[in-house]
Amino acid sequence: MSGDSTVSGTGSLMSPSPVRRLCLIVNPVAGGHARPYLAKVIAALKGAGCETTMMVTRAPGDAERICREASSSRRYDAIAVAGGDGTVNECANGLADASLPLAIIPMGTANVLALEYGYPRAPSAIAAMIRVGKTVEIWPGRADGRLFLAMASCGFDGRVMARVTAGGKRMLGKAAYALGAIGEWMGGHLPRLLCRCGGSEVRASWLMVMKTGRYAGRFVIAPGAVPGRPGFQVVAFTGSDRWSLARFVVAAGMGRIAKARDVRFLEGDDIVIEGAGEEPFEMDGDLVGALPVHIENAAFPLRLLVP
Image (tube, rainbow, N blue to C red; front, side, top):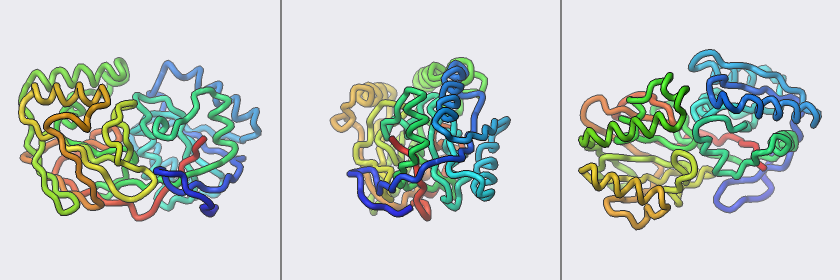
């Protein structure tokens, strides 16, 4: 496919190429309540004339492996992933050569990228979107060699992620993160981090390197972040106590983060973050390691199926 127009703020829109053969990667842990919904999507895909091969993940890393194998097999026109942001992230890392477009069937805790591009909810609309095959370019970030699509973060939320167990997430969903956040906030100790970005330097206790405007679902905190072009917007919370942190979180929830105290915005293409000790670091909603970390643009864009 070749780009023939540009969608403002999102990247190059590609001419539709109908999807007839689809590899569907399913994370059975994500959205257990949504399995009847997934069955309706699969039925709608069949009704639309899309031959669908379903692959179910069993362990971390499966989605990445399945995606890489599907991409190299040349048996499919596209890959769809039914899961949360972490499973979508695995698939993005499996599409290392960007040979196939990717679609999202939202079933996870947040599904930030699907929200960013206004994905429909109705099974028939999701199936039609996949079948038509209209794509847009998205430009991932890369942190120490691994891609991310929505955000990379450390500080307060990295520590919250470290508190949440897989079992807790499976049982409680978003509530598991809320409980972890309360526990971390009650502890009252915020980390001190150093971020170098675009020739600027900032010390903060929470750093979010954003590719999308949204964080944790519908909270818009980075209006300058654009998934369809290289570069990042960094949201830096510079407060040092839990009460300033509470004000920052409330401002983010109310969509007033630009007016919040103790916040700085940076923009750039090459970012280094350092912290004392083994400070946890997360990407697209999953804990991946510890600081320090080097963040840069991916070598090439990926293609996302969109409405």
